[in-house]
Amino acid sequence: MTVPELTEWMNGRKRCEVLDSGDVWVHAACKTAILRFTDDIALLVDEADDVTHVRSSSRVGHSDLGKNRKRVEDMQQEWAER
Image (tube, rainbow, N blue to C red; front, top):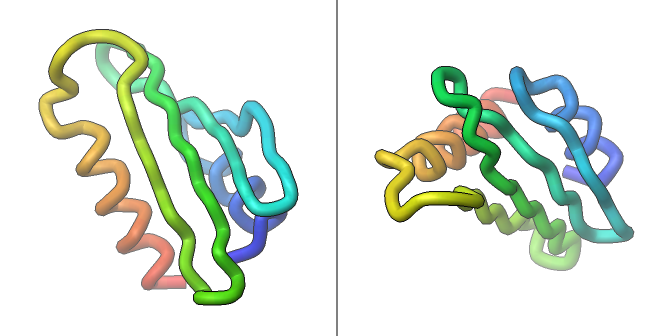
């Protein structure tokens, strides 16, 4: 995926908003459904290897109860289905 495609895709996800982007990266924030905690999502596009690196992390707390891992797995599945 390209950065413009990722930006459009992330903005189209529920409770997610792209905060910033560059030539090869996108920084977005997503809110959890129930308690509205904000999690940061970083996407780095490596076009040479046709890979997109993803990092999802909570801004607060010691445990996210697996939410960030689940988000990344859901994203992988959605990308595979495109």
